[in-house]
Length: 239
Image 1 (tube, rainbow, N blue to C red):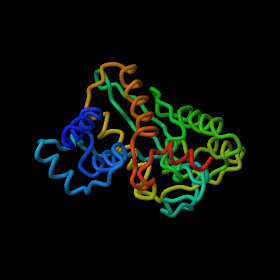
Image 2 (cartoon, rainbow, N blue to C red; image 1 turned 60 degrees about the vertical axis):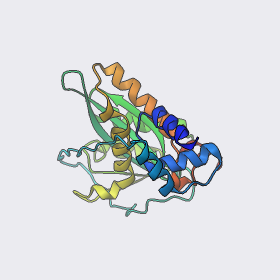
Image 3 (cartoon, rainbow, N blue to C red; image 1 turned 90 degrees about the horizontal axis):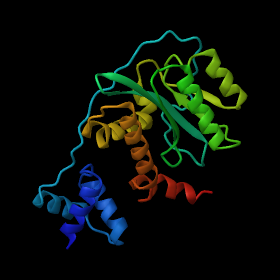
Image 4 (tube, helix red, strand yellow; image 1 turned 90 degrees about the vertical axis):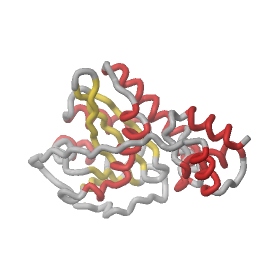
């Protein structure tokens, strides 16, 4: 029975799917072409709705050492792997309002998370090590890297690392988070589909949750923009 399969998928992902994503996953799993309106009606009948909640991101002003032009200019598409990367840092809380920071790099070709690092401090090491990890995982890559104007990205040290890797630097305009839209959207997805749904008492619990979600996002979460494939499935077609 179709509604039983809907409930099964809903439970597997802790209720994070709305009717559109449920339709995509049902069609992929069953090899069918169900209309999203039908799935909406069935989910409503079963009292199933996405549990996603949203929070606003907080921004911290910084005094830049050097800045780059907005070369990406909101062209959020790429013709090949490792052509355009986005990056950013976001904050999480655990325990008694203790803070952790996640730096990630996002490939615009397949919407994959190329590399990420969670740390206790929002500092240069967090961002620099994230870049090193992304480059070591993709030998020979020299993409454009777009970011906001956070202090790590405007530092001379970061610019030197990009120059050494023969990478082009691009930065959002002041106060224009939309210039890094897909990266911001990923943070929203991660927090809504995982972080906001649970409480994390320890750094280890938070780390495990983030590792689990990013693996799910890269390898199991189907995306309509990728022709109904996961980022890793889409990437495999290009290798």
